[in-house]
Image (cartoon, rainbow, N blue to C red; front, side, top):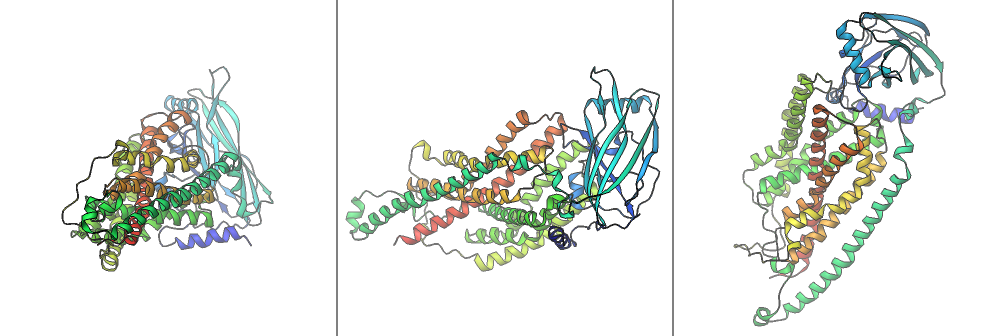
Length: 582
């Protein structure tokens, strides 16, 4: 009957063993209890700076108990602080204007409300998982009087036995003054609506913003970049390699004296060193394993978001990401462990632990540092101790064992080196080359085109996370994700070919870092966005923004670096397996 709703319901049941599902089934009988949750309050221009609703001296309604309560891991990590409002709402039961509480405005409470009004504080509530926003108060035109809204009027639309629309109107302004008593009232109006339950979240989306012409144009532009780069790699590189193959084939007919006298140069000369293990193989294999892991998680979560419309459920996207990351931990162990074994690594347990805990340690370390600042500011973003314990247990008792399983399988199934060329006992000296052929220069320039392919999408993602927009165009994100993978691979292959032609066989780290440098440009762009596109201020908001942008950039960099290494390794193996080398 409701295909989108059924898809979300099935997907929610898929997550049932990992998170506690909502006891509410969104179906009501006439007169049944409807819960109004109060969530957070905070300044409008600092969206991520939120506090508990009752951190302001608001008063609660007279009702003390409710039939259910729920909170998922994703909600806890996102700082969702649901508290019962104490207001009695019954399904399809209209309620006239009713006073539910009053507060005596002491000097302390007066100053708290004055600060909230000056800072343009907004608050958020939920009815049947539908968000509602309201403003605390306003300043009069002269700037002298500060007013607070004291009446909440709820207009709720229903379709059958389901709530499909909620609107809040703030009415009755009361001028703030120390010593007065302020009554708070509410009323509820119910009406039938033609909105389908599956479409009830559409009113919160902004198609004019996300489906603007510039968004479509950026996708088209990136797609044309992919065609150009793939054509460039196919045409220029393959033509160049064909000439190299022809030259090297002629050399097979020459005797040793003529070979020694010949003018040998290019990528063939490093065939005895090109498959030499990368420096710091343990760290390198752990990064590659983590990169494969992130890529799989990103693909799965984006796909689930498209199918299940995860943006309509509080914290479901984050809960899904954590679940998928834990469930796919064997990918990390398999890819990282097998690569480490092929590089001749012996301390595989240490490598496995590093691979399993590298990203979680960085994420948790950054999050806990920000958490201390949030606790100092008494912000709702402070992660509860129980949630920290839950995340730690997931890492130790789920991710680590699954990574161990993947590592054992990887070492036994794909751990044997099968290079097409023998590795020389003594490393070949690397000749001097022009400055633009140095690995450091290649690394810096390697991320320019990949960043260009995702630049516009970064703006939309940043705006949805740091401003009042809900990101829902995950089809765009999936397409940009594929484009990023292709562009990164093509650019890294080109860079590696030039590096090998300069007889520099240090391609493993160079290919990884050249692709990973995309994240450096993303992080630099985040500075521009912070100072020119937002109105954020304060230590907490600054630390929160740049801390989590660092996490995003590092994750993106590891994933892009893995794309670059994967494509380059296939390319290197292909060209050296085609040429006959004694």
